Amino acid sequence: MLGSHKDDVADLLSEAQKRKQGIRETGEYLDAHITGPEPLTKMEESEVSEDKKELSLRAKIRHLKGIYGQMSHENEKLVAHLENYKGQLDTEAKAAKEYKENALQKANENGLLQREVIKLKKANSELNLAIREARVG
Image (cartoon, rainbow, N blue to C red; front, side, top):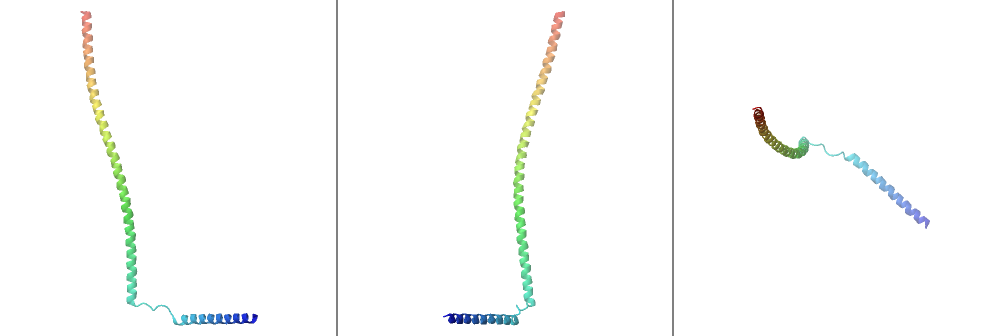
């Protein structure tokens, strides 16, 4: 029984060695007979060069479109910010105009009051003068 296992193992070992040798021979054959792709013709080299140029240009175009999109987005944000700022300035300008109008109105009222005060002082002076004359006279 042990002998049959030894024979089986020996047979398997022999078969594995044959496969290993076959793989080695196949590798040597491939190394000897396959040199890689055939060199490109001038026409094929030109086509490959043109394809590379086209791919490069497409990549540059995609990059520029990305930059344009980013700039466009930033521009929209800036426009929105400026419109908001303009709205604030308009509100402040309107408030300043109302303040100015109120100040002018108050100044006019103050001027009228000052004239009335002057008239009253003049009338008071005339009244005091009349009272003195009446006492003296």
